[in-house]
Image 1 (cartoon, rainbow, N blue to C red):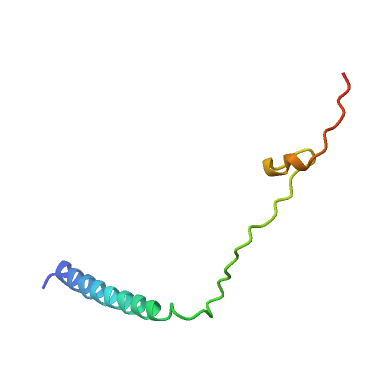
Image 2 (cartoon, rainbow, N blue to C red; image 1 turned 90 degrees about the horizontal axis):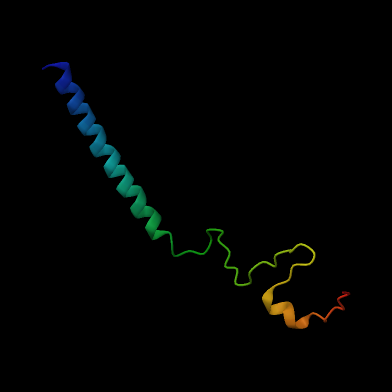
Length: 71
């Protein structure tokens, strides 16, 4: 046979082996998803963002005292 056909044959065999191994590894990963030992943390409280001076959240506007403005 010509070397071209050998290349095609080995490429096909490699493709089949890699595809088989990829699906086998994905299947074993799916079975381990039930355990909670994967290190993910469920955070329900969002972090408090540090705002620059003079900037407030809209929900905190009613808490501010009216400042005296000089004209």
